[in-house]
Length: 198
Image 1 (spheres, rainbow, N blue to C red):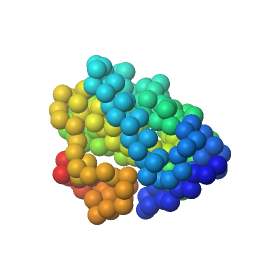
Image 2: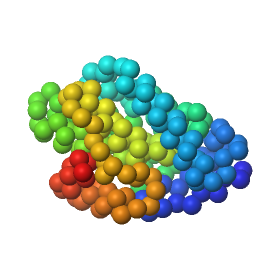
Image 3: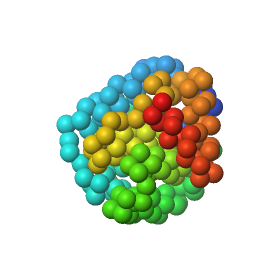
Image 4: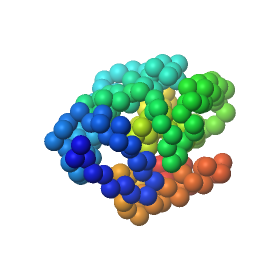
């Protein structure tokens, strides 16, 4: 396959088998891939706008998979399927379902009992979801969209701005985002909360 991807800081490399899952054979560069993925993500966003979701509907493995498939299904054959390889980040592939179930249950508890303010619930969910790293790729964008869905559909508040720039491309904004994520890894969510609304 002619797909030769250059990875920037914080991106998860695809293995050769995962690259074989590319549905559009004419894609040869990172820029082309980004464009096709972005178009697919915009279609998924339009689908979300047309739907109503309860927290109970959102906090299911089925919804997590469906959203990923809607975001990437026109580009990748593995969209919506949990990864079968270990990556440079994320938990062991065998632990994905168990860790995700724990996150979904915890989040339902947070919402039902007002454990955190709405923004913090959405951001804590996003951070743990990307830390699990359910899918071969697209986990950052998927987790940010999930946070947006929670804050919009559950709390009827405006979606996050995420620094108002494309976080897929190398930039100072992306660097700041990764710094905030690393602090959240240490259970300090202040910068990630601030970044999400900056």
